[in-house]
Image (cartoon, rainbow, N blue to C red; front, side, top):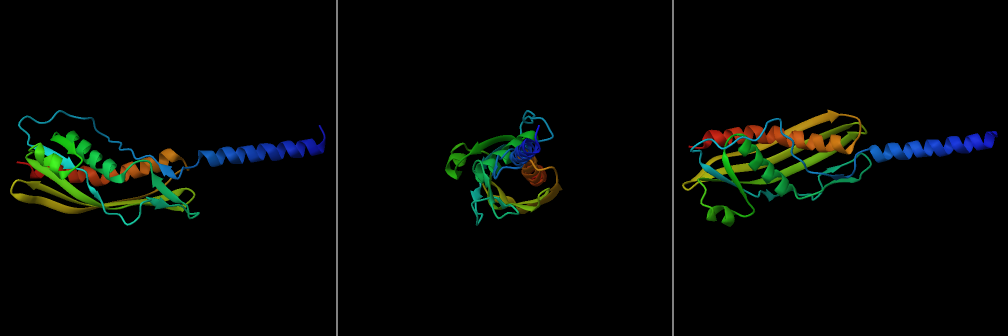
Length: 194
């Protein structure tokens, strides 16, 4: 084989390898998933009913983060739906009799004992380097019964992680940050139920 053919073949293989490595990196479009460490449980006997209303998305940006190169991370679905349904799932794992309602009117029509409402104020991922990403989620939450608000809190969770770049690593970081915010919130809500 001639030297020129070897050089061309080496160049082609190098470019193919670089292309494959770039394709393995994280996508700018992030799937919103919620992974838990616990199994679902049946509602506790006689537990009050709780309706989780879809939270209001009060974020100032429609994208969810920024990469080192200036491009942005976007969500594959709506942040409000992901956050609210994940909270309802987490309450269900705490043994609460829970339902989800897209609007406050629909929640009230079901006549639950309690209603959870809230605002999402921040969901942000910042790529600090090719292998390090920081994620922050902030929300305001309120639990009300027929008499009024019985519990409210500003919630915040932040994580920084170093990993081999991949789409699943980004999704996992976002999911874990949400879980770190929702698990304590669900326990506090459950503690307020009478």
